[in-house]
Length: 224
Image (cartoon, rainbow, N blue to C red):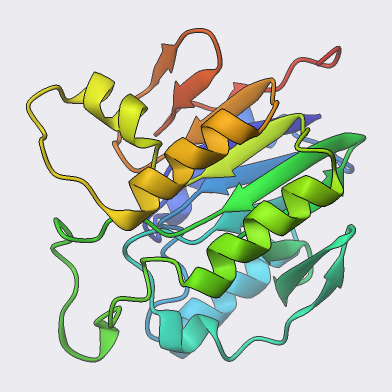
């Protein structure tokens, strides 16, 4: 079974709740950005990553607005479930922008990053240096991979949201960014069944396809 949750921000207690204890070998948990366990690279963090990678279920995540991208970029990129990904530790894997994966019989389009203009953690050596925003190569990569799959997937996992959905969540927000406009384009060209994103720290369904997730553990229907 596939389960979805929102930003974990390096909080290990999120993985020790009773809902996740029910997950078994072969299950998948996907985190919609701001994973937060790749932050300073110290011994404590390495132990946490090893512990996460040893869970009986696999833990997958897209990157968010608050990540140590310099540290993340040190991990090797390899082929994983028909897409490019970074295996961090054991069953812990970073899903890369614009890739499409075959996971438990579902086609999943992943696109991390987001509008980091409101980020409050861009300090010192952990400054994202603008890497939370996608490059032209990454956006083109996403369009190309969708075309290869006839613009059809089952699930879309992002950190940020399409512009139209962002405005629905906060009608007073008049700002716009490259990634929100790009995700708007994806929503127009792609055929999909469900879309999950985590940036807004809310647990709410926006009918008929969109879900903003934070602390909830959402189970993907088996018959999707």
